[in-house]
Amino acid sequence: MEAITPRDREILRNLAKEQLEAAHSPKNAAILKKWQAQAEGRRESPTVRLLFSNFTHEVITPRMRCSGESARELEAALLSTMTGRTLFDDDTPISPTFDIRWDTWVKPFGLEPHLTRPQMENPQGYHIDPVIESLEGEIDRLRGGSFGVDREKTRARAALAQDTFGDILPVRMVMDSLTGPMTSPMVFLMGMENYYCSLYDCPDQVHEAMDMACTMYENFYDFLEREGLLLPTNGISPICQESFAFTDELPTENVTKTTQCWGFLESQETTAVSPETFGEFVFPYQDRLAKRFGLLSYGCCERVDAIWPEYLSKWKNLRKLSVSPFNNEAQVGEYLRGSRVVFYSKPRAEYVTNRGPLEEDAIRAYFKGVAEHASGCLLEVAQREVGTIYGEYHRGRRYVQLARETLETYWKP
Image 1 (cartoon, one colour):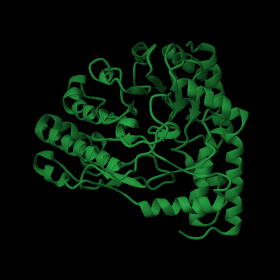
Image 2 (cartoon, one colour):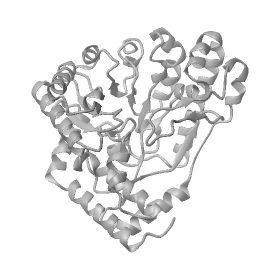
Image 3 (cartoon, one colour):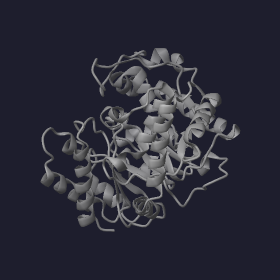
């Protein structure tokens, strides 16, 4: 990695000081109390965040000042940690550490997908160019998945951060939740139409591919255990879908088994199949992986209401359930009410992305519905799938304020 220039070093150290100050502020202490209540299964106050991963070009890139490539990488990480709080005044918890993850990877299949993206700034969409047309005749092309870790790259980044601002913001190794996506890698290789046709045309090959992917993840988990790469997934550490790992059920140190960690599973690609088809082609393989986790977070944008009774409800370690707008939210609330499973609400995005002024009455009415559906549940609200706020930071801040005020009025523990 290239050396950090004196100018870039000063910029990074000032950002580190800002994060440390925020981490020790009364505001952060109050936010941590909300997350700790959720961790202990106490229904006290919902957390509300506006997630910006789809519009970093509006909230991160314009504020970057460093010139060196390595410095800009560190700067982007520091700014990202603080953006929810500094720009939107949301409930993002801030750690008094600079967090780095092991550079690990796992590829369930031996092929790489081919995607075509539009020629535009910050493209969100893409087209899958199938590299496999039929599983029946091409199943062998999927073989050869892999996994591993780049220790040298990880240690070099940690050393650079420690040398630059570690006396202010110490470097901490963290781990994301364990993952095991199986249907999405298949769809990225085949396209959705080919995948759905395969469920009917060659079900045996679909099962073989699912088993292939599932076994690769199981071997990867064994590798993490064997190589001593597991870390605690607790407190202000990440779990998939941009949430946090607060819990009182998992260790905070000396983690040696995946059953001591958070895991994450989803299958949004099969949201249009019947529950019975999900139960035949997806659930048995997800169930194998779920048994390797201590706690489980489930779901992305798919419907979970239809597959809850016969499938998702079977997982006793499930603690966070994604509730996208495609669900019958009232029904999911009935399923989760009084339990320790977090109703992880992902509200409709158009209320903040529609052009023109925010329609505040419509936003209040919408979040009144969310509050009523999730009353009696552990509630976490994360506004995802936002592609733009038109560079208007105050727009995001006001949106968070309206959501929080409405939830405080109508959500009941």
